[in-house]
Length: 296
Image (spheres, rainbow, N blue to C red):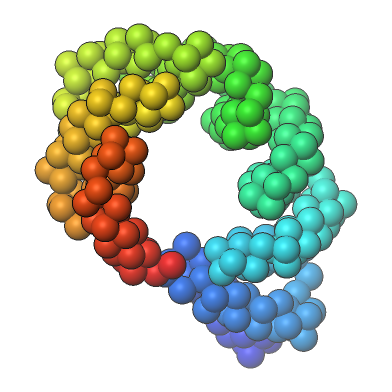
């Protein structure tokens, strides 16, 4: 390789790294342009590294998704996975990354059954290649559980999350953050399955004592308890609990932070349902503020 080729290759890699950083930033449409330019240059420079070209396409799909171009994103991610499976095989972690991104996109456009089929196949393949207790394999199992939960398959989701909690406890120990996350999700799923907030209340006591009252997990449990009261029509209890959530989020992030405003929105919705005429006007202001801050 000549010096000129080396410089071009280094520049190409630097621009690829820049584009990757932009994908998850506030301007994903810029990442789309950067990655599309790099795809053209990869063809011009005859980049022979299949893995780099496939990663380019995978990140392009993610950037398109975050830019709101969902249908096109799915097509790009489908092509990326097809190429990865053919050129790299299912022993390569890039192939599994492509599959995970496509699963999320399929679910996001309402193709839940396809997403679940792909996620199930991906988990089985990953477990066969890397082992059942590999961190990536366990992440795939968690993703599969979440897909079932979002699709309304609460019993199946709870079964899978219980398996994940058991495996993460075995692999990382009970107090590892990944294990705690699984326990949190399992408790939420069981509470919704059984329509019983007692497990959530027990977890709330545990997290308050061990992690503190304003830890994200503790506040998350409060939010699920409030939402359960709301679903069950216990609006007075829901209102009181959303007020507690709002206060804790305000202490943690500030009054105008998105998490705090989201809790305020839920609280005002409950007040409106309870017949508070002024809540509707305040709710509109909060919704507009959220949209402005989040750039929607």
